[in-house]
Length: 401
Image (cartoon, rainbow, N blue to C red):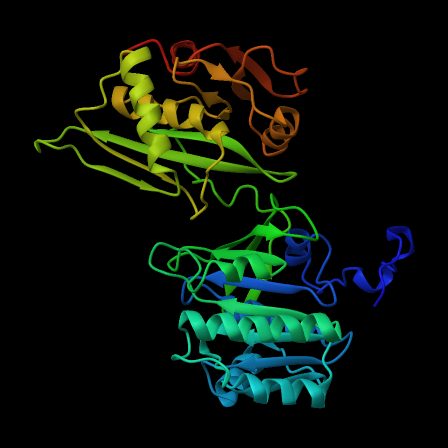
């Protein structure tokens, strides 16, 4: 095809089509794109196959969908689809591990959406090695990508992850596909989070929230409040914050436990928080706020299985550590938002207005925020602080400190 001026390129064929699952469409930036290749990764048992089976059934209302399973038999997938209510007439199912046979099914069905679960189970006669090996994964992925681009088929590949949570196989696989999604969640929790690691068609800072139930996966359009612990009285070592995932503010709770230890090397354990960030906040409290937490066991976690990586969580973590160390509880209806620097200063964060509006909507009445922030939100008292020491004085009761 000859080169043409960019203004003459037809964009209608590249418009995203909604999948019917609003939370997934939010992360994708509107839906799946014809010819686009999406890689979804997640730990075993997190719900990848369940989510994609529901997407396949919803998308089958638009056109034919071909679901290739290489890890389960067709009967097993059929039983799950019956439980989920995903027996759509235009949803075609095949249990195959040969890429050549998959191409034959595509020729026969002519699907608008192709789902391959998983790419590590597929094999190609044109490559050496066992299925799941680097050579085979590279060849299979390349064949599926060429198939998707040449025929305009939206394609979803399921990928395995390694012990450290990264996608198994060659790194080149992530470069070749158009979208990389990470499906996260504690296996002991019903909450699941979907993040876009790479997206050529939309934002990479959005998050989708789902609840895993006996009847399938349900999207949660308003997840605020799921990451909080309901209690009658405030407890030392807890602090609520508001994190911003894309354009969505989420209320979350940070918990910390600082306990004496008889061990020569104190324990450090984190869950849902960056361990390096926790160590940095502890060092700042030691040096800038004269809070001796380094010789104690420290445990820090989030509520509800959410993972908080945004720097705006620093101030809530610092106050939770300080409250646990001094055995003082923060007042009811209190939130803390701000990044903590190495000098002990509390730095401004983006979207403070949206964060405060969300806190006010859920009934919070007082917020400690960086000094000189934007105009206050009606219905919630904002207290501007310059450093963690001032934040501790403003938030924690004067007695026993």
